[in-house]
Amino acid sequence: MDIQLKRGLLDVCVLAAIKDEDSYGYKIIKDLKPYVELSESTLYTILKRLETANMLTVRTAEHGGRLRKYYHITNVGLHRIDVFKNEWSEIVSIYRFVTKEDEPRE
Image 1: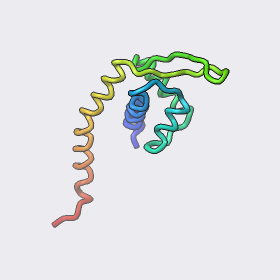
Image 2: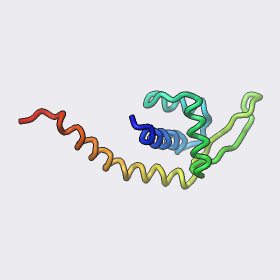
Image 3: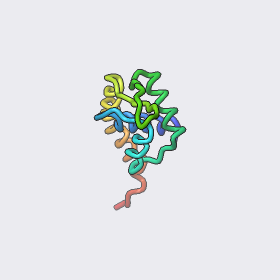
Image 4: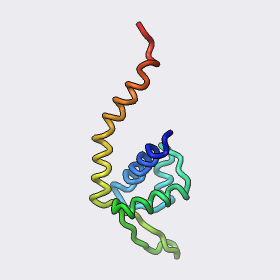
């Protein structure tokens, strides 16, 4: 898969994972596991990129005697999810065009 396309899809997946409630790295990976395999190093690169783009904020809280970073989606991040949803129909249309030759001919 094209790295730019995959990067954009993974960004939206991470945003969707924290859309309804703040979350932390391990839980994000666990929540995404049924849909996409994501390593810790890839996740933290994505989280940093999303933070830099103001799509999420980070807060640190103590949990079990250790500090844990919690990620919170911002309005910019929510907007990115909405934009993706609107773009999805175009992506599906392109997929159908590309794969139409795979369909049996009559």
